[in-house]
Image (tube, rainbow over all chains, first blue to last red; front, side, top):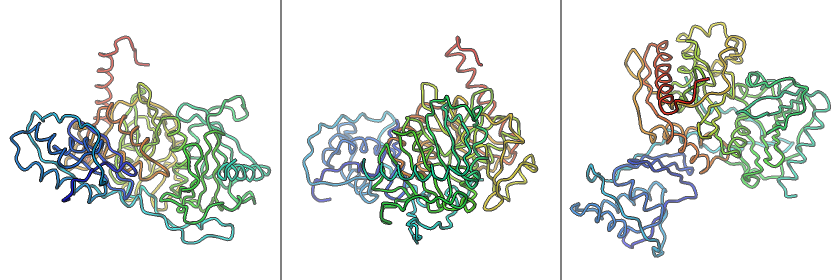
Length: 150
Length: 357
């Protein structure tokens, strides 16, 4: 991440909802879902608009003037989001004005990304094994998708 | 007419030919709306028991303005097959949705596990479902039939099909949400056993008006064989299947406790604990969203952002609790009834003019 690229939530396959202290993001790409907390909630809000690392850092620095190492924290978090394909990077200039970041009264909490992969089986691609003479796929034995319900 | 409309029309023609032999008609009330079920031949009657509690009234009454008509047939008992699909095999998506034949108003899916074709047209208020041999349908389709159709139809009206159990008392109820194995069925059946009303153990419909309501879809319940001893009251309950899990048909034994609808008062996220007695603990809406949205959305054909937003809106406006499951299954209804009583009192404080019905 040497260049200051513009990052944006990948709305093609990621949906999210913001709460006061957490963002829940769901990826239809691979069936993962995520809990984003700490200052990650604010970073995510800026990434929904589209922002580069420098501008995100500047907004956070205004909210947390005494916090050191903010740029590195932002860059690492953005890289983590990229690794999970939650955001995209583009070589374009940011045009939108970013909203102010309000400091958390409880103090600065580094960005946290918690990934959950326990639902990925539900998005398993059903392979078309065989097509009958009538053109329709032949039924295959697939266990109930909610298998395990007690 | 585009390819999708043309194929849908051809499917409907095939159903009408199938219906010339024998046709069974039922009128259901689903999420408060009249739905007509047309079954050609005998095979697809296998799907009827799970829906039978929703029957509206006299089958001969044709005066309804049906919100949806669902036509079911199989080739084995009608001798009629649909035309071959107009799409290539690379068009099948993760849940069998046909990528090139899917719009918000016209949807197709072929579920490989069920061996079932589902088609739905919003404009025609019509759904068509076909399988080759209905007696080969897996038990989970007989226990919770036509999920893609309910999902597409409810979603188009701004409502939601949710992967959740639901129980109620005096018209107020809770959703019990979480992935398979989290305890939804056990909790719902424990509450039913204790005298509470039952709306479902796996899937429910939710309408999202000013006061969200939960609607029953299926009068079935399923349990693993090794969990049966915890609910001895189900010993004599009719069973639709004993294969992968036991699937119960609750109509005969619990007819008076199968509720069709209730006001949603709380969302419960079950989790196992080492304690003997179950307990409740308030949790964030975000936690409930994590428990409900992925397990719902990842199981349904052609689900997307609008469905997620609806679920998010629901959890944001509904009190959410962790339901710590204890060994005392019988005590689960006690704490849920206590919670419902508290929410009713709270509601009365805020709306003193509204009397409970």
